[in-house]
Structures are given as structure tokens and as C-alpha cells.
Image 1: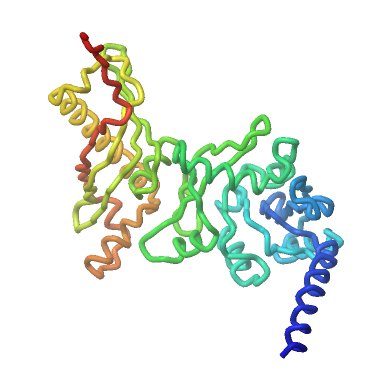
Image 2 (image 1 turned 30 degrees about the vertical axis):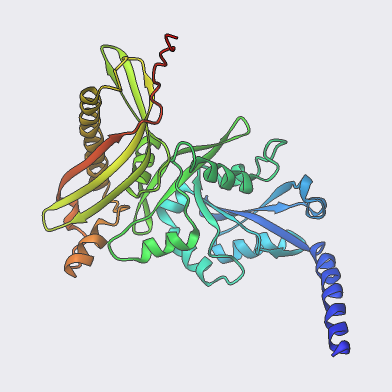
Amino acid sequence: MKKIILILFLFLILGGCYDYYELNELAIVIGIGIDYKDNEYEITYEIISNNAAKESANTKSYAITQKDKNFATAMELASDSTRKRAYFSHTDLLVISKTIAENHLEDILDYLLRNNNIRETLQIVIADSPKELLASTSENLPVVSSSINDAIDADRYSGSYAIKKKYINMVQEILSFGTDTTLSVVNINHNKIEIKEMALFHNYKLVGYIDKYYASLYNLINNETNNVILSTDYNNKTFANSIYSSNLKIDVDASTIKVRGSIKSQVLENEANFDLKDPEELKKIETTFSYMLNEEITKFISLLQDKESDILSLGQNYYSHTRDKNNKLWLTAKIDSQVKFNLTKKGIIYEVIPDAN
């Protein structure tokens, strides 16, 4: 027994040394960019530098790019140009161009699904130029891929307009009946990550975009929001609030898309000086914003109908109730949104009256 324990102990120690030695022989790919230009696939790898791999506190990266008319060959050329073994176990971002998203997505996804070296859980986004994006390293952005993922995670607790989408989830949405997928569009501006808008898909093709406000509304409808701002003016004075919680549900029948549920919101700005302690005043505000919110939800779903992008899985919703595979019905269905707006006491400032004594 003692001999067995000793052998296992030596194996673990030597195994650790072996792994450390092998690390110097690997090109650790942290991000992959895919573009299509001049009838060629352009593959960019963002790679962690060797020195950084030894000292994680000083992690830095560099980018390499290769092209070929065949996608698989372009991937192989990029791997060969690293002069080391390309290692994808730490790859956490896939960046595709708008050209890929519009015309070549099916071939890309098929290849990546069959590639056992690439993880299915990496995040996926769209950029104007994946090559330029992944090569935009700086003192503030030493590893671009990680910074993009961090920015998307941070947005989940602030603006709520980023779409956090794993590669495998995107594939599942594309392949599932009665649903489409969506992705965030990212850019770098003055060494800062920008989430520009949200891309809409139908099947394998990008069909349009919506702005950050509608992206936050999309997250709200999916009950994945922390901060959707609604505001209005009363006699040129602003009243604004932030929706921080939602409990919504969508049902689709033969003629109507029904949105039901409630949201919770808190006051951000009360320049109009409403008496928020007055129940009647509070009720009027909630009625006004309920109307506004339902109007915005209706406009949003109508926009999706125009784009024919079923990112809310309305076709799948109808099928789950009827077993009727009619994923076109939602395109002409009426929209009936009846969401209740609740203004909570958060953010309301009460006057403190000094004790007369």
C-alpha cells in the first residue's frame, strides 16, 4: 500500500512538471476571429504570450491571421503559423464578421461542431472586423477576448443590453424549430469595449439589427434584466425610473401574441416633483408607465415581425400548445401586451420633520 501511495505521489509531482514544460510548447488561443474577404476566409487567433503564461498577473496577447478559400484550410494554416501546437482548451471567445453572419454561417457552424478541439461553451459575438478587434491590444486591453467577455458580464448588472450567448446555445437556437438567435455586436473605441447593438437572425442568416434600448427590452421580456430605463416629460420636466425586475410570460394562439405579467421599477429622477407618498399620485404614475411599457413591447414585437426574426421563440411557443408546426403564424398575429408596472419605494426620498422638542 505504501508503495502504491508513493508511486501516485511521484506521478502527481512529475505530472505537474511535465505539464509546465509542455506549456512552453503550446500556443494558447484565447480568441478566434472569422471573416470573409475577397473570396477567402480570414482566420485570426488571439494568443497568450509565453511570458504571460508563466506570470498570469502580467498576461498579454498577440494576434496572427491566415487566409484561404477553404475554411478548414484557413484554420489549419492559422494553427500552423503559431509555430507551436495550437491549444484551444482556454478559448473563450468566437468573433464573427457581419459578412460571415450574413452569408457563411452554416458552413462555419458545421465545421466547428465537428472540431473536437474547440469548446462548445465559448462566447460568440459579431464585429465589423474580427482581425482588427482581436489585434487591438493595449495597456488597458492586454487580452481583448477576456476584456470583451468581462464587459458583457458587467453589463448584466448595469445596462442589460448585452446578449451573453454561448456558441452551443446559438447552435441550439438555430437548429430548434420555431426560434431564432441573436448576438451582441461589439467594437473597441478609445481602448474601451463598446456593445453597439444587437444582431437579429432568421435561420442561419443575419437579417437586421436593433439598438441597445430594444436589446434591453428583449432581456426584460426574457426576465433577464437589471436596468431598463423608462422616462417621460411632464411640462418639460423629467420623470425617470429603472426597471430592475420582471416576471413576464408570452403565449401565442391562432390569432394573438399575449404578453402578461408585471415588472418592478424604482425612481431615478423626479424633476417633475410628483408627490410619491400620495397613493393616488403613485397610481397615476404607474398607470402612465404601464401604458408606455406595453406600447414599447408592442413596437418591439412588431419590429421582430417586420424582420421575420423569431428571437422570442413565438413559433415554438405556439407549437408547444397546439403541436401545429406553423412557425409563420406569429408574423401576422395581433400583439396584446398587458404588463403591470409597479413603482416600488426604492429611490423615493422622504422628508424628515425635526422633532419639535
